[in-house]
Image (cartoon, rainbow, N blue to C red):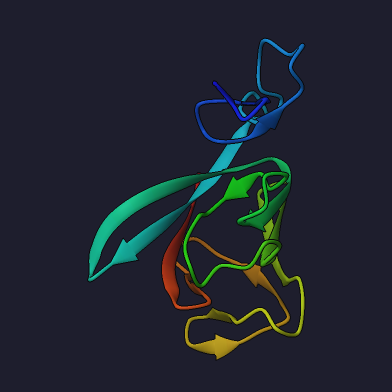
Length: 124
């Protein structure tokens, strides 16, 4: 899809106009961030092997267009079945299971708060 002269894949990742396939989308899937709104699942975001920058920015692998999410809010690193969540600035509200964090290892089922938004982390 092309918007304002920029090309994006179906998941919203910015692509070079010459690319036919999104490099983010073909990277092996290792988990998901499940967004909850008013106690119900509202959106599911893919987490891929390697670096997953989470935020509003068009360069983010996990692009979340919600008001309380910053351009570069957090980073999820996925490698060898292990996951690490890292806040990207001191202004980014990042909590895991109700605790403020700057960096933490994630496990399946962890509840993550980014800004005012709540997600459940699910690993494969």
